[in-house]
Length: 391
Image 1 (tube, rainbow, N blue to C red):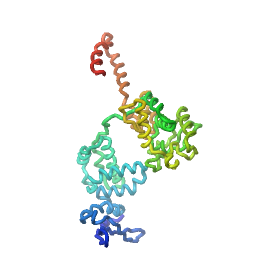
Image 2: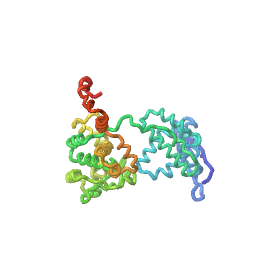
Image 3: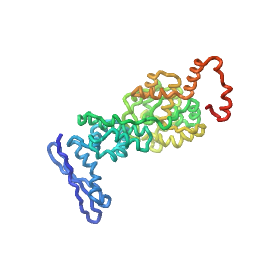
Image 4: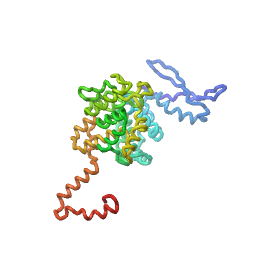
């Protein structure tokens, strides 16, 4: 790797009959041969001064030099990571990385030298962002991955982001549907939407996995669905993790619902999507967000389920919570949910539902108290009648 870093030549190019433009001239070396390149950065109307043009060319200059020397700044490290590592990730992961880095990390830290980024400064910056704790944690993780990339290439020996303290505590617990609420919702849905919700609610499939399914993935003999791919914004790719590429069991009732929908669907060949977009003649799956807005949420209201924010991932979370309530072994739950790490499953499992907490508390108190104090219900009556709830 050469240590020569080229800045290129930033020039103003005069144009007749239109606005002048800023042009960056630089060269590329390949197989020992040098080729000169030029790229228009913007018009003088858009970038009035050379200082404005220099700011606009900063990211491009980093990309030009991504193979030239050891990255010195966060922006240079970002360019190297995107070219050599990010492309290995799933499409959704690439999208999340680009959104978080361009919106938050680049503007604040892009020009900083890698050695000048301090743990406490990053922590203070994250604290000041008006975002949910979980979002701050995602930004921290994205930032930390960059330094891990540098350490892997032996450019650095310490990751200052790894010591940053953030809280991933939710501002509110994720809403789940009880078994009764799920039944009430299903009763309000059309044959297609019912099949889709039953599949999501009984298997815990992620929405990107569910809409990528074709009829060839449904095995009637073994009563399983083979999860082989995902679809994010009409881009098909690998599943979230290797563990996600596992078949999931289908309950006979859910399989019947899917087969009933297949009989009605205009697209029922093995290569057709389970839930195709009719507007696009079945060439693409339908939009899960659009279906949620037009069908699922109105059905929730008709079923009398209000005050809960329900999205596709809530069906997966509801399944996990109901498995927990049934006392299903955590390892079995991990297999069903296809979590790559049991810690993810345990995190859900340790959040016991409120009624279970109340029942457990009642049982232990019954053991602790003497017989004469085990039935003080008459003392609670006035409190309940005044507040409408237990204190």
